[in-house]
View 1 (cartoon, one colour):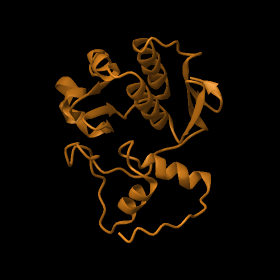
View 2: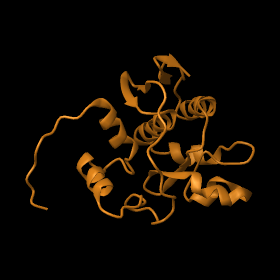
View 3: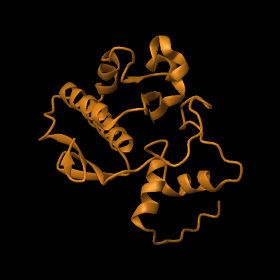
Length: 177
């Protein structure tokens, strides 16, 4: 790398596409674009995660104007899935034991987060292709409806001692989900 930098202007939808492609919190926009523009690219796991743990994906589906309100900040997101990922990352950064506690919680058939893609789905390990990296060493289920994201966000907030609706919330077109 030459080390030279250049500033470019991009539209909001392009920025959202870059953010949807983010694999790890420490990945810069330059790293994301370099990975996406590399010929013969495949989506790989973030540094510290096992390679090939997730299947390659196309651009995420976006609907509405999603955002996460947490700690007095509003963070834009391109989709419900990205808003959920942002919320989990923010909670993990602010509450060191959050992911371990959230991993102990689970629905009828799957965990909310896990250390491996297969561990998310229990006996339905064939669904591990829906797992996506959250942060190094952690995965989350990306095949979620907006209603399920809202339910899981409430559980996550409770585990951190936060109140969903005032301390933290996910918005779709400025309406709380």
